[in-house]
Image: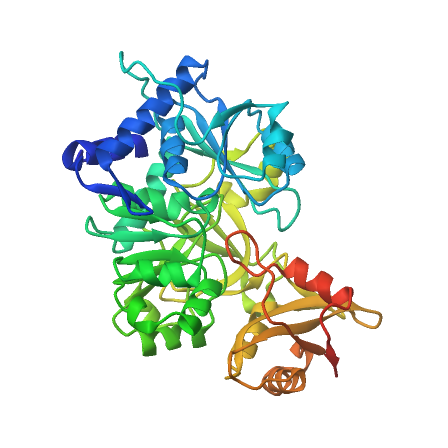
Length: 495
């Protein structure tokens, strides 16, 4: 292992030299060693270069989870190109528009709807995700420096059209260094990957590979397959919605084989955490807080979470987090969290206006999250600045109501959205998924929330749903819930 790699590529190369025979990828019973993985990645790099790839050129990645996705992601980086992972659930026209917006001319395409492939064929050079023409392994490949763009990560688009977040080899390196210094990644880890690869490479794939662990690649999240994989695994990365489904439906004796899990991306109900600790006392839980633009911002390791289950932890060692309570409307709930880090994006792709709008004082990144930081440096989220419900001119944070709803013993998951009101502009409505085998009515839920909240925060309606609509990585899709309410697809009991 080299002491001070300056790129993630150099770091993984060092692991390959030291532990080339160690398992790197596992898929459907087949094992790829680190040497196998790197040889294939360098072959992909040579194909790209022989096809005319120039330093910094953008290359799309579109497909379901499979080892070749990781091979080509690394191959693009090894060739000095810029990978653009795209959500494989999008329609062809949307994918085409996104790739055109980042000037991609090539795209690796895996298992996708043939209609999507056809939609892209007239605009881009289509590269097979798996395989490819034989290459001549002669000559040295170029060496990309830390300032070379490594990836353009497309934001979820939950607040508008997705933006292209540019990360360099250097920012990706810093993110990986921070993650592996705070969370318990080890060389004997076997990490189950079921989140879509287009979304989880920075926080799950790269830290595991840089510490010499193995990744078991599943095509998607499936409770039975994940539970079976956990019997041979030590860890996985998830979102709270998935943790809730696993603790509710997966055999605990299978999950108990794990050493630790990491979760991120949305609010973690304290009741869900405590249930994990009660049923799986030997499995550590670690919380990551970050965003596409600044990959890791804060961390709450297991021991801290046991003492303070509602915190998102402390800022990473090289990250500075503060509260901007002047320009945001947090009020008593704090203000907007802003952060700076060596793992911060260099900007939105060819969008100086959006980049400038996203930055606060001293170039700090505006997170869009409301929170407070106590005297111990612990960070607590209180809501989303763009998710705030303004009712009669008063700001209401949905996260607080959601936390109260989650305390009901018959609630598995709950979200709160603002719905139009002629009198107040908008008012909060809570929608919950009942816990299997438990009786729950909308009236019960509404009464529970209203009894525990200040008058102006009380929801004016409640409804039940079998399953919440989710985004590609499993987060609750609030826009979809709001639309279902407005269209009458969720029955709402009103006050």
